[in-house]
Amino acid sequence: MKKIVVCILAFLFLPGAITAAEVSLTLDEAVALALRDNRDVLLKIKEVEKAKEKIRETRSGFLPTAQFSGSLTDTRGYYSKDLSQGSAQFSVKEYLYNGGKTSNTVAQNREMLVVSQALLDKAKLETVLTVKKAFYTLLLAEEYASLNKEIKENSLRHLTYMQLRYENGQASQSDILKLKESLASVQQAYEASLRQIESMQALLRNVLFLSEDIVIRPQGNLFFDSRGIAYEEAFLKALRQRPEIRQYLAQERADKSAIEVAKADTRPQVYASWDYYSRSHVTATTTKNWNDYNIIGVTFSWPFFDGWATKAKVEQAIIDLKETGLHKQKAQSDIALELKNAYIALNNTISKLQSLRAQVALYKDTLSVVEAQYKSGIASHLDLDDISLSYAVSLFNQKEAMYDYGIAKANFDKATGGIDVY
Image 1: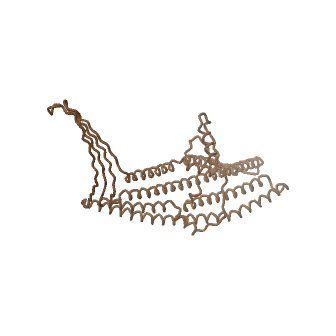
Image 2: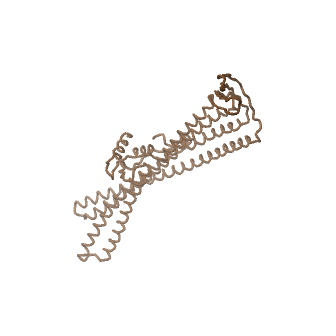
Image 3: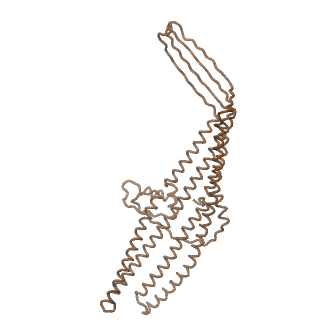
């Protein structure tokens, strides 16, 4: 599927491609494009990459540091003889213990990577939901425009029939004016439905990050899945898969590591070092002398008092941990409410669909009866056209209910954290 999408876009953006291109997309293809090209998702991907580099940065604290420095000076007019001096120094330093600061910083950044990945998944969930809503709305808008076109054509036939009756003296001018006013309203509704299609086209192009000259042709139908949904199972799934839960759990662990990082400022530090020195000097009358030596040492330091600055940092880190706990509790409560509302809305749409099925069956049966009457010469062509339009309206009402179901199902999937299917 992704290869097909890539080939379509490659064709569209080739030099010399037609200006107003049409793209046929299924829902799965639209979702795949959004997850690949949507800028909100791409920005979160970059944040994940930065978090990985941050871990590499802090891991460097486990490795020794090496430094080289050198100098060359030439002193004239100060000593009895001009003097040139050169020096070089090479130093290696390795922390044996730094209060656990490095290890806890690495642990903190690992958890921040989990936070970044959770935020990426959250962006994906929201993007998928936006794509589904725009895609379903575009499908329904096209169905609505088609229905309004049928209503407009039916109104024109009624107006033509009424004008014939008026010419034969069987209808009044008022009857014609009423039909014209009704036709104007139908025309307005039809034009409004066309503008709604343009609006949904713009929204979907923006989510998929397509150019403005591309016209999207959605492929597929609004659907209904009659399988039952268990609320308790969905709630457990939400607590397990929602990115917000993973985000705050990881943030809590990161905050605990941050407390240890802050405490490390008043803990002892021990490091070993090795320094190699080389010096030489040259005068106007003497030759170069070399003085090479090296120093190996272990240094112990304990900054046991810093004016309570570390204590204040630790208290701030503890407050951050408590704030994260409150955010987690709020997120759990919000998720439970969101899931409950989505579950109720989904069940309401299912009930509505079941009632509309009976209505569609009634109009279908009525249409078959009128068709038989038309063939027998009992009903007119206009009668058949009217009942056909009523049947089309009942079908659209069913599709509108399926649209409501699709939106409710998309909200429910998002509430349960159903990103695993993409």
